[in-house]
Amino acid sequence: MTTARTACAVVALLLASYPATAQERPVWPSPPATTRIRYLRALSPEAIRRPPSAFSKLLRVIVGGAAREHMTQPYGVAVGPDRRVYVADSVGGVIHVYDLEKSRHDTIKVAAQSLIGIAVVGQRLYVTDSVAGRLVCLDLKGHELWSRGAGDGFVRPTGLAASADLLYVVDTMQHRIVTVGLGGTIYERLGTRGSGPGQFNFPTNIVRAGDGRLFVTDTMNFRVQVLDRHGAPLAAFGRLGDAPGDFDKPKGIALDSDGHVYVVEGLNDIVQIFDERGRLLLTFGGSGAGAGELWLPSGITIVNDVVYVADAANRRVQLFEYVKEGR
Image (cartoon, rainbow, N blue to C red):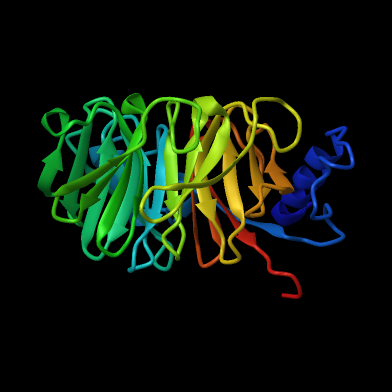
């Protein structure tokens, strides 16, 4: 069976395993009726690395060599304007850089304790060092340009989203969103602790829609909150539970080109897709290490309808594709 067929089977089996009611049943039918999520590939240093030449093998035997690099615990994923894929590894202070066109893997070493969020704007990388309580700006070679930390009010920055001129930083322990200019100027702090509209309880991740709306995984309120561009609450959906559409440990969040909301359910090893009203459309993933399966997934991003999921415990990023109807 091909990896693509395996991944489709994973989706179908996962949906079939839920005893969903008519109200809870996903709107999109499971494969093969309509394929909406197509598995593409897994991304890791081992997967992208070209086989060594005979000369390099001989040289390694003669002079030895360091152990090959791997991703330890990938979390944040971003795709730059150069189409390279940047992955924040939460262990070891490393950003992994994948050039898919050249089948090349490189690393950027960062003086950090726990990299979580990552964004690329122009020729700059922005990362959150959660344990150290820092937001860091780097050039593409990894040189630190500026940082903001405890003295600026950060305690545990995690998820990160960017527009052309602003960063939106989730501070989990402060239960709020902080807006920061690309040069490091802090502008607003949105939200307080609570369960009401516009309040948060240990939020973790964020994504910005093209119209400026913000979608936030309000993790310990077990919901997704939607804010307008100024931070005013617009809507929310989700609840604690183990039924389809419920949340237990919501983590990464992303939007496809049609505005569907993808939420990583880390503890259950799945990604749930909702429409903007919060109706469940489809679930994909499932526990395991095979093609399309996930183990403690975390971050997610979507660029040109390619879905990048940080499959943390499997030490890889898995790529899927959102297939528009009729494509």
